[in-house]
Image 1 (cartoon, rainbow, N blue to C red):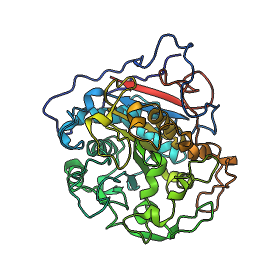
Image 2: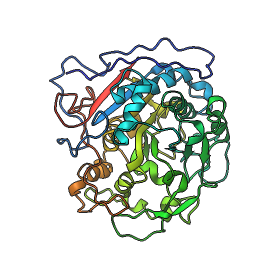
Image 3: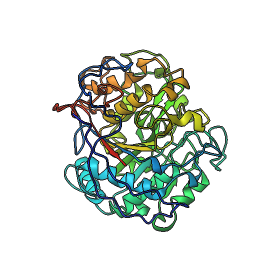
Image 4: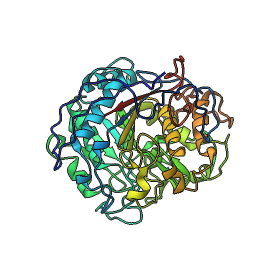
Length: 445
């Protein structure tokens, strides 16, 4: 069976244009990663293959949409990766709108957003005045100081993708800019990013960082496992929001991988201003290289004010870093696997299932030579997926932990975890006609 692809209508775009236009986007029904000899390829992954763990969730359960447009990125490898003229805003906005439509099983982004909000809110769509908080990953900015220039080669949320997401929320979902907050309370946002994302039709969007974040002392994080560390409070921009969007990066980490699950390491406040996760003593659970152990990432996924409010999970995969501390270069961010074939990933992934999207991300990262050759912590180490096993099997977690939502309610399902059939076909259970598992939808130019 071929990897599914949906044809969706392209959204209109009023974003400022780069010097040249990409060619018209058309969606291919057969991705270039799909060989004809579909039944002859064996599983070739490092992670142990298994039946789906958990139950898919979302308006389209277990669905992960992958939008790929090689015309969205044009960088020769010189200068900083994040410079705005490396990206085509109209192409990226189309990728976002097309992805939202496909994720909701609709023909356009407006109906797609309606389906996503309705799923998250028990059948009721977005209501005017409801607040939306977007957790960006600004880990590479102001890491060691208060520099807000953004002039670093380390990775952080792509500014053009963030702007496209905001434009889609305002124009297609009908969210007023003043009801949107972009936050990361462990870092400082680059000044140019804030300016880009609060101008024109986005005037009123608010940014909250480690200097402006306010702890909600009525909302401490209650971990499901007892260990020492500072008390951690969610910021008020989270507790006051009706909905969250988890905008993470597809990238490696010095501990293996960092995706939507770990993105919330920037979602709490304690006495350690520069390094809240260290103040919380969380890194001990990411460095043990073991399966079947407690994971704080699962607690964050299950938290009623974090995962419990999340209407959309998104992976920024336009230019991917091999690890969080690496300087991004043209050489270490051009991927070898098909369909990239020595070029940038130029992709966006979205889902309403936090376990499914991180499972897909884990497959892409572990099977990419450019990443594993530049990241010894990931290379050949399947234990980096411990949190996905804990999350997929959360009703009977391998560690024996009883995970709660930080409000005393036991969590019985967070989403579905499995691995693709092989790195060439990239098919999951629902692509293969099964009733449960992940469905990977490719929207490709």
